Amino acid sequence: MHESAAQIFINAFLANNFVLAMFLGLCPFIGVSGKLETAVPMGVASTFVMLVASLCAFGINILLAHLGLEFLRLIAYIVIIASTVQLVEMVLKKYSPSLFRALGIYLPLITTNCAVLGVALFQTAREYDFVQSITFAVGAGAGFTLALVLMASVRERLQLSDVPAVAQGTALSLMLAGILSLAFMGFAGLGG
Amino acid sequence: MNASTTERWDEFMEGIWRQNPLFVMVLGLCPALAVTVSAVNALSMGLATTFVLTCSCVLVSLLRKLIPKEVRIATYIVIIATFVTVVDYLIQAISLALYDALGAFIQLIVVNCIILGRAEAHASKNPLLPTLINALGMSAGFTLGLFALGAVREILGAGTFFGIALFGADFQPWVVMVLPPGGFFVLGAWLLIFAAIARRRQKKLAENIQNA
Image 1 (cartoon, rainbow over the protein chains, first blue to last red):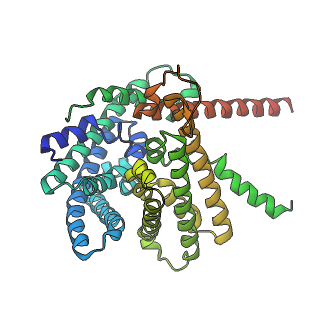
Image 2 (cartoon, rainbow over the protein chains, first blue to last red):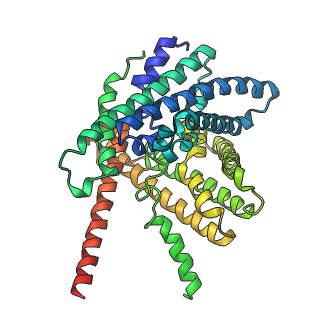
Image 3 (spheres, chains in turn blue, orange):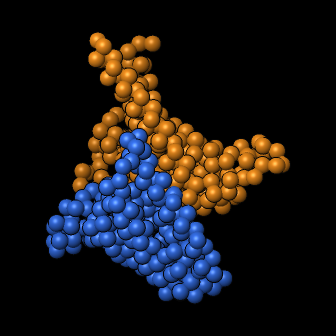
């Protein structure tokens, strides 16, 4: 089955949104989506890591297949992701210390963001070629950012409203995520 | 029961109830929501995670004096990834149907925050036995949580439990429950229930203190 680049992008971005339809990257989704001003940079940083990880994973996969060492794939991927995150961390620390502090613990935690590893694993499982892999990574990153921004906007509004004390916190965020996810189901079939 | 046995039991129960990874700490959400469309899937995922969590924590605990502090996280991740690869091939060998149902989420156990969290917060500082008990308790708590989600979603969304039809032919399944939004709703509902219980307990405790 050959998918065009546009189809892959729409699929990863909307129809099969990484967060709301495939449940990838939920920890930062719940954790960082409190404020809009941290949600956007978090989304962009994750997207960058996804793109680099996807590129490296593509190369590593060819190399491992050539050597017949496919069972090392998972370990190789996770090491790549960890080093990319380290790189992003150093760059941010140098050029934007305030942002670095705002993201706090969630920045190193991009390593354990399943969306990043998910991109690398899915592109291998679906046997995407080079262009398809890049499109997939960008689409997934954009979808992750979109979900994060939507959620942050809703939660900023929510702070002004009167919520029963029992429902405050994570329970309410999950319910909201459920409603967002329902809305995103409307995009099903868009990617063909 | 002597004192040390009680203590160990307490440590085991901590993972199941007071620090339940799913309902109290809200960690490891991705597999929790993605694979819990049926009780069987939820249980298998729980068992796979149990294996990885226990083995990794034991190994980390045994090697805790050998691993240099600077590269400890990287070392933990490589250890975890190794055990996940083992589980991945194991499930593939045992049941191909199950492997297809769980899909990429078996490999995604690597990035389950519970495992890395346990390795860093507990296994790296404690000797073998307490680590083992703590890891088993946490895994049991996680598995129970997954099962609670999977069972509710399967009963409401498909009208079955472990594949056995419960309500007869007239039952109209509540399909949304096995679709992605259902996962969020069911977990949210469980969290609400636990929050309500916790609040009631706190109230009672406060009243008792006031009366005394």
